Amino acid sequence: MELEFRLLIIKKAGVFAMSVSDINAEKKWRKLPKELRQRLIQNVFCTKCFETTIVDYSVLDDEHGILLTGKCKTCGKDVARVVEDA
Image (cartoon, rainbow, N blue to C red; front, side):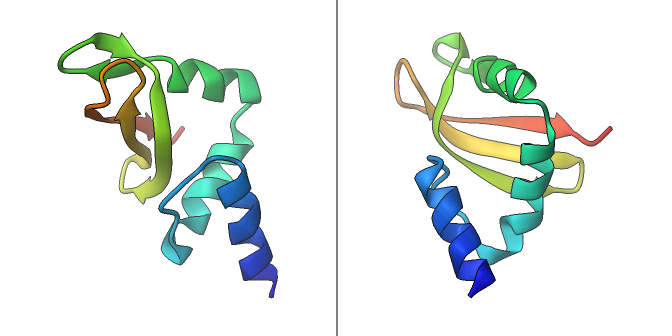
């Protein structure tokens, strides 16, 4: 029941395609200060637009930290950003 509630909160927060195995990534992401998360979201590389904002993103656990995967706000191409563990 607690897991279902947690997934519902994540979905309402705008994080899509979240799977049960990525709950740890979401916890790591939420531990970062809100201002830092905003800067990271707004500083993603797109092969077409260069610096962009990531939208419709998922937070995934990665061997190096957290992986954000989503779309470029400007052109809609797939983009990703790694946030390394400290």
